[in-house]
Amino acid sequence: PPAIRKISEKHDKVFVTGCVEPDTSKPRANAAFVVLARNKELDGVVQSLKSIERHFNRWFHYPYVFLNDGDFNQTFKDTVRNHTSSKVEFGKVGPDMWGYPDWVDPKVAKEGINKQGDNAIMYGGMESYHFMCRFYSGFFYKHPLLAQYEWYWRLEPEIKYFCDITYDPFLKMIEHNKTYGFTIAVKELRETVPNIFRYASAYKRLNNLTSQGLWEMFIEPQPEKEAAPEDKDKEAQRNEPPRPPEIDLEAMEGEKYNMCHFWSNFEIARLDFFRSKAYEDFFQMMDRSGGFWMERWGDAPIHSLAAGALLAPRDIHYFRDFGYRHTTIQHCPPNAPGRQLPREPFLEMTTLDERKRREEDAYWDEIDPVQENGVGCRCR
Ligand code: GDP
Ligand code: MN
Image 1 (spheres, rainbow, N blue to C red):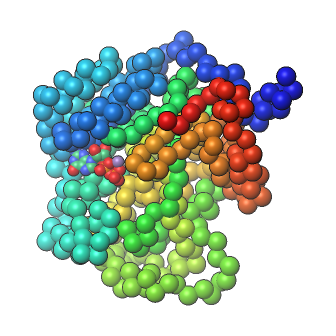
Image 2 (cartoon, rainbow, N blue to C red):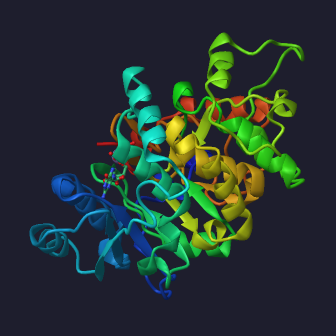
């Protein structure tokens, strides 16, 4: 009927034709799920495993790599193995990838962390959270258990997938020459990253990187050129960590971070992006600034700003067709506002333009494809 055809022009295929049969005919990509976790998170891990197995991996059988700064106990390993028929490996994260590097004075770092705790910065006072963020920023892709893989899909405890994923996202990303995929982009808590953008900008400028169009995603539109920085920022800058002398941060004052970042608890990405010299240089510069200790830089804004500096919109894929929830934030395909992103899976993300964004919002607000068609994916 014409009504359906009208919808079909505008909606992702699954909302029009129903759930497609999983296409497992092609060989798998060289990829694995990566899960960092602790023994005490077993229940949350099981929830995530059940969800990803049910909605995807029971057809595709991608292997899992579990990592931990401690040792996984036998119960943890046995339980995980009971929930998947895929290959599972358990690895330990050594002190070379976890904890304080030898060039940091642990006393100073610990004081910085305690101060963040006193200031009630979310996770700011938790040493292990700082270690985790730094590990996911600069090390996970160097872990020996990941050496054989070219792609990874990050999985966390207590997440949920709502929709069947009936195609292989790795193969699709390869086919469309994508580097980094996300489902949710949100704003960071400003007080966790007061100086992150000044360093990321400095990196970009020191390396003469011109924007390929993605950097703009992270810049606050500035109505007036002479706008004074907020008092909070000024104070943050006074408290900033010591920085390498060659970096002229003052020159970067023109651009301001809008706090946007890809939420990295879901990520599908090419590992060679992180393993590149450019990313390593970026990580080294960010790391040496002390921001992983004196501030509470998350791996999400780190990955995002690196992508902003080094990639183009066409390298990024928005998995808008993946229903996904982590804690209180979720992305639900049937009713999600489109933001500034393309409506068809695997179209290029070519524009961040305001008019297009409004068009997209209107498109997603207009219709509930589940109700109209009685098929598709419900967020439950
Ligand atoms: P949130 O998502 O930002 O609230 O942080 P989480 O507590 O979920 O931590 C992010 C990821 O790192 C999850 O996969 C956790 O299991 C893992 N993680 C966090 N802290 C530690 C830690 O100290 N040791 C280990 N092994 N994993 C951790
Ligand atoms: Mn989490």
